[in-house]
Length: 106
Image: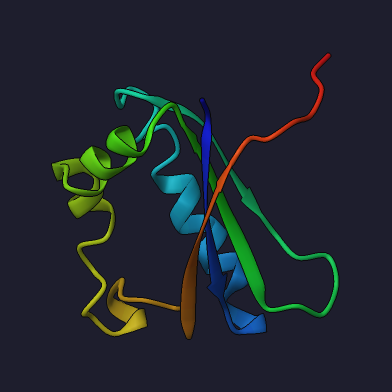
């Protein structure tokens, strides 16, 4: 069963481009991770400040293993540094947890 993890990141309006740049710089870093099924970074097209990082996993165990991995640590290593030195640009974040309960595919 696919599980969905959505990190809703609150980003100041003037920092969105930097968030997108940072994600682009690490594009594909999680692709080879056991149980990883896909990723999207969703940019708001209205006045919202929440960007959504949507990942799909084949199990909770796969997601948990990734959050404990070296790759995850490297991707989040600047979290305690000021934004201008690679630190966080967000003002908040929430992790939302879902499982696929229905839908359709092409």
